[in-house]
Length: 334
Image (cartoon, rainbow, N blue to C red; front, side, top):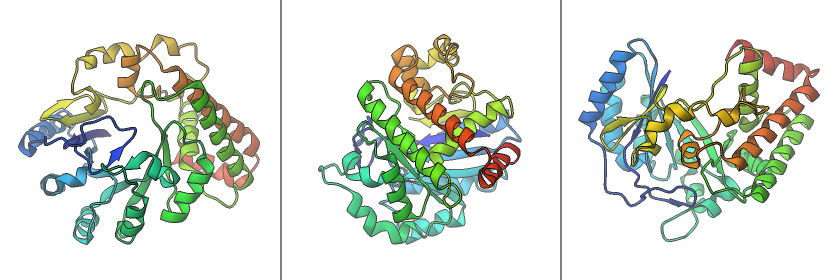
């Protein structure tokens, strides 16, 4: 699969603390130029599934262009659509269109951390806005949730359970992987929080869905140990492309400088070769690793702990019948 992201603009109706873009930008893309780029990608990959991701900033600020692109490409039998969004600009008409065109939507929602990380431009929180918008959000047919783990957000189990209760969704909790975000202390706190989540799952394996953050790292391990598949980086420039400011580039993170020239050098980092988790670790954000001139130590510290804890879970639950069915599904069906 080829992921082709459209970064309509960096403009956003929120002012999230971990998002360092121009949220008041007036720029936007030219859809005709995007279609030209799409055709180039399609001509090189005539039978490949292409996932078109609607990105921002906040993509719903560019609703007319989402409609234009969707209508133009929906008859391609090998295309699918995906959109991460804070969801606050949704209405019934938009939901009806997204459902009719089978657009997968991932809600950007941080749960208990929402009013810490995701504020309005005037500094007010946003959790109350989500409570008002939930009846419309829940009308989406194909809805998931992703939440960002930022420095200071270490009550992972508590937040997992909160989001599950509010949205009835298993949230995809993801580390912020930028340079300069994590100290050794804040990374250690996240590790404690992850261990608490793993312990909870081990104790409740027969009665609860596996948290997505645990499943993600389990899949990394199984792809190597069961299938001998090693993925060393995010795929920027190969399986992942971005259309940003009217040009096709490796990733939107690379749009303002020449760091993309160093992608070949950092796709396989020498510093990773002696690492105990090198065969299944995704190595974090390629752009941030290039900025850092190598792996980010605090990120590596957390990754190593996460994989170690998932391996502990596998060892502990290896005799559990329900867990064994999960392993078989991931090995033979995923």
